[in-house]
Image (tube, rainbow, N blue to C red; front, top):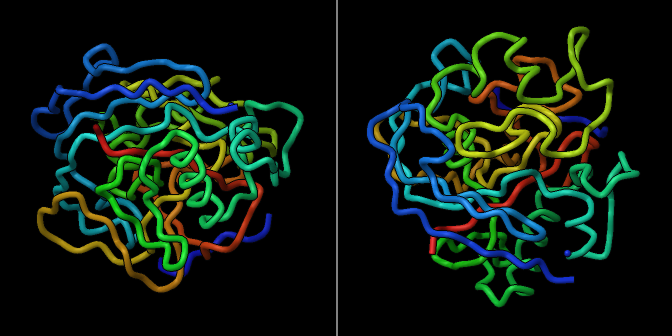
Length: 280
């Protein structure tokens, strides 16, 4: 399944970032939103994701979703929604998106490199340490600024304690509750939609399934077996990972475990990103 690629296709944010002391006990435990501290703020909302372990991957999925392995993650913060066009314009002064007309549409036609630059610019504006070396695009995970989530962080945050194909269940009707997706039975009508309109997961994250694909930090590569702590694939074959499926994709692409890669310098009108940050 490797080498799967996708074709062409505010003023400073006031952020109040909260630290979570709550741990996730065991694996695949359904946690309620109120069990996890969160803070809604002007501009970008960051949700506190508790530390914990989960089973990453899917034995019934594509070849590159195997083997399933136990992954343990430290607590981190994740954007409540995908970065919107209004937020992207506020930081960069630009809007490269194909679908326009409303500031709360997700920013699309953003390359992986553009997304990493956005994270650095946002960190600079808030007086935080930049995570990315813009000469090598290596990420310093010890910095307190913004970055793209690792692939493991993305899947863990998407699942929010669930073990089903979507955080709303296993059926396509369950997906329709959580996200905008394509194909004959899809609900997206061949376009992206303003963020935050569907059912959030147990941790308060929206649009983790569908709407637009989301860039992750990792290079595309095979999973390794055995338990892992805070994994991040920093080397690979030339493609960065995207997760979550989009308005263009069928239901299978929107599963919590589905992986796809694209060149970090390529854009499409069905790919964007959300930001992450280490816990203070």
